[in-house]
Image 1: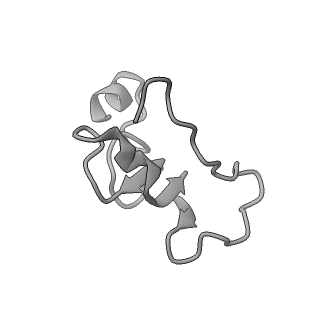
Image 2: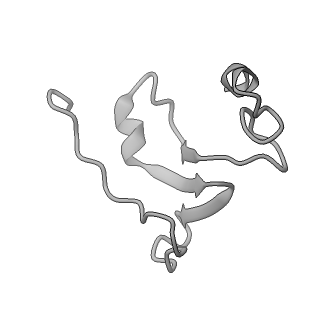
Length: 79
């Protein structure tokens, strides 16, 4: 978040989703705050501003040095 980035003096590089800043994003269509199972349907993953998994090409070659996304396991007690 921007407040955390300001606190550590990195607000020029992180803290908001905007051009020129580093970003780690997991994008989903539905609202995970309403239904956590939305996190099981990932549209794309961005690490350091680079898309490493996308719904259109989920089998794309991994980027060297970037961990390959793994399927998540359901938490104990989840549906």
